[in-house]
Image (cartoon, rainbow, N blue to C red; front, side, top):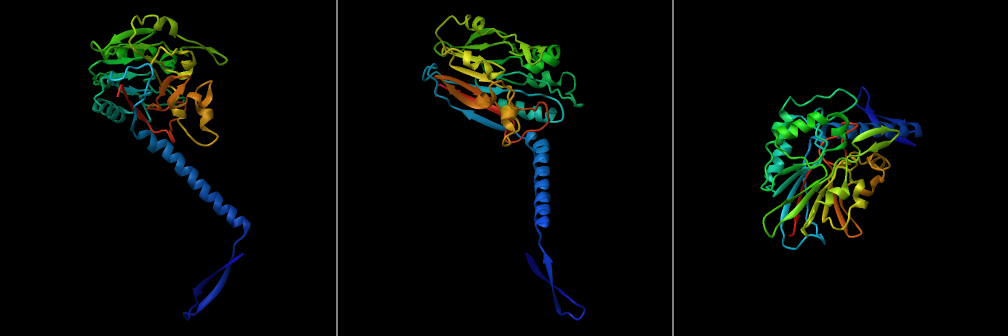
Length: 308
């Protein structure tokens, strides 16, 4: 294949010349474009998408939630505060966004501090608790712990939540709401709390013991960090809220299913999941884990409206 171009000689006359377009040139050009595309995608995943923030809204119809018993819930999952993706300005933006939703209830689903193999910047001492303390809701702000909290920062996280006056539910259930609008908020301990090696863990979770504390027929919201427990959750629970997966964090063909930290693969990776009449919402979370990048799963604060 050839292509004609023309140039001017010294007298101004056009001189035709032919450029040979070979398979090698085509392949080299395609490779160069692919390389640029990969580099641009990587730059976006590392520097741009992790700094974004969206609000994802759900209005699920739940069989076990009474019609007309309205409740709004803001969910903050997997903050992973610290560098390079979740420094003070971004944390402030998350808290301001959550407060701006004016929900009845705010729940935190674990993994509060970033931990990477490479050096990462930490929030200044006391700053995490100071930011979390700004969260406000009429029915309170409630938390559970995640696997990263247990593996790396359990004492620091407990202190930060205590300083922010945020109660932690660890296999506990509390009844909230006013007469005629009451519900149970239950939270279990982390399912992967203790690393035993060779892919084995011992959890701090006690689902039966937690639900045994529910003593009335009012609906139940269940907070869990890892969604893998969902097949064991009974229909008695109106809605399970989970985090941990980051929605896969990097959604590329053939890659993202393997990047979901779950023995069940992509089954419970993200979003509103319904199985056998039971409902769960899995947040894509906010920060990053393993690698400081997100692609196709922007950081999100979740807003849920029940009883609408």
